Length: 207
Image (cartoon, rainbow, N blue to C red; front, side, top):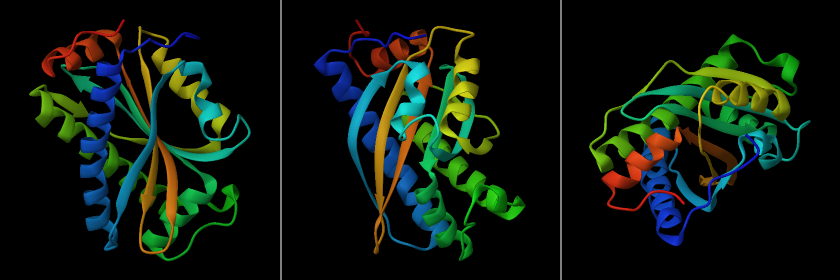
């Protein structure tokens, strides 16, 4: 699980385009949910070893809010959205008017709100990807976790270890009228599923 897949320029360009379109749809859905106008940029897209996910958000002890769900259909795997604690507080403030000061103060209302955001972001991404490729991609009920990045990463790794997967890490910056909210979108399809996506886009498989 320590190795990532090597992509050529065409494959990376395709992944970036998938991210732009999929997360563009997700940003529109988030705007409709919150009543705020959002724009999104994608500073980086890369394939990473699954067991290095916690490093993306600042290290193993960084507190994060993660929303993740399995993918079913023509392509299987997992998708997840990870918000560092400060970004999660920003999302909560937009949704419910306030944010918990610490992890122990996260209650049912906060968890439900973040589940809704994660579900909208993840499902919108999948729907856009399905439209692009003609593949059937189904989201399953999301799960939310509020804890250190290492614990969230371990949960994702435990799920991914059952099959050969590719972790695509998509750094996101979601802008509203006031500031940017940083997060990381993870798309972790099986290698066979990713190759099927590339085939539908007319691109050779990963090296």
